Length: 470
Image 1 (tube, rainbow, N blue to C red):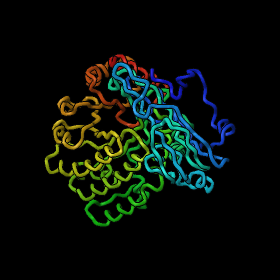
Image 2 (image 1 turned 90 degrees about the vertical axis):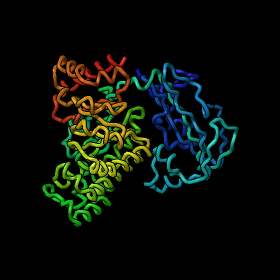
Image 3 (image 1 turned 180 degrees about the horizontal axis):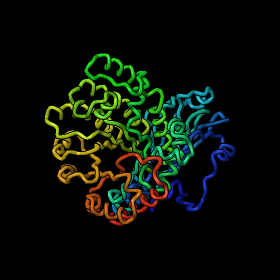
Image 4 (image 1 turned 30 degrees about the vertical axis):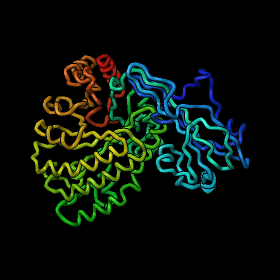
């Protein structure tokens, strides 16, 4: 079992921290941020619970004196067991002459109370100081950020590679949980975030998705370009390129991409210990959706593919800024490709995989089908692929830690059929050899799926994978 988030104090295991409002009444401080601290746990087959973070600001007094006796800035006191990892260390951060109170008073919308954004971009103005967390008594003036009050999580137990890596693609199904029409659900980040958290907790999955529709970018580009739903671009004419450029400029400011980004931010706060995965169309698939042409034919239009790559990059960077963990790039089935078309694909995929690496995300190619002949060429471009279950073994022999997708329809099968399918697949072999990276579903789980059968099927899949992963 994973550790409990924000469980208690080392010196008072069953103690309870007071509410921030009580602290603000008792002490001359303001606490504008008090959250779980994402990824502060020690990872393992069973991870430690995540810790917390608060921001303390001098309030209602001209000066305040502060000292800290905690350590763990260089090395953590709690240590892991049997291949697990220790929790992260804690810096001693303060900001003198901070502008946070002034901006809050003005209602500055650019000030976000998200730890990742604050630390990465130093969104609070002032003189930042980073030192050992334990500090001698020091005076701070009114409105100074006295400290970021970090409390890390617990240590990991067991090798993280032994975790049961299951992240089902459940997104639109949340509309059923919220009893909302799908159109209303997909534009409400609050409803989406709450439903995803409930679904993830219920299924005890290792992760959740923050956007699941592979058609989201194409539909948003059509809307930005004022295109009718039944119309297509001609990739060989300059007018299409001009239209695409204009659409890309407006892509991130409105519609469902903006909703997806907001959901990703919220999932990082609501589920700090869980993998957050984004699913999006790849350059070839996005081009096919916009032009109506097949994947093979789109490879003959490298200039248009560079534009779809540019659109995906804009969305990928925005997702990276939210701190998500993984991105699955969906592509249509492509037959055997030669060196020429391999070069075209490499020019599309290289910037995407490099951007994901920059933001610390795992990028995985998720093709509808995988031609074994393409294995060696793809291995030169990318290092992670989600293979459809049933793919020829020679396709994934080139990849050190493959991932697999199982059919959504499997969730509605009888229990013996589910067990027979999994035991006859390559999933179990790679799981038992500790070489499996991820298991997911081949498509987003539909909203009209039999709910009771899905619950039973998901539990059976988890039980089988856990049994063979021991």
